Image 1 (cartoon, rainbow, N blue to C red):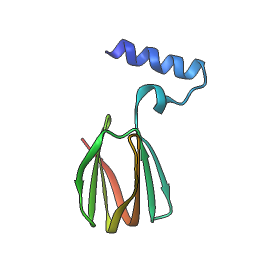
Image 2: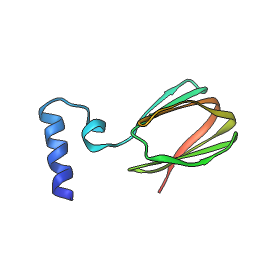
Image 3: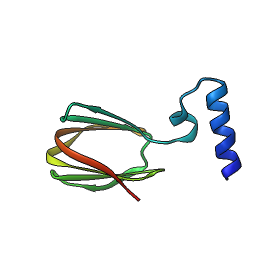
Image 4: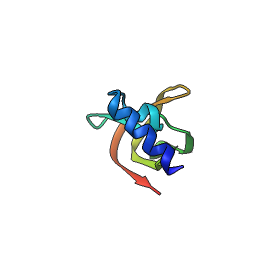
Length: 91
């Protein structure tokens, strides 16, 4: 398994491809304190207006804030809006 990950990392570097595509790791975009987009997620672990937990291959991303809601949800991308106060990885 580790050899496959190393191979994918090397391919990514040599072909100048984004690692998140080959390794299926999350790509997180934060726009100010009001919008977060996460690509390459697995599922929604917990959802409320104060906390959202998203499961990824790197663990769970916990987003805390107020008036949080899902603006967009596709197979590979989730867009969260609201007053984002903090986020962290929970292993």
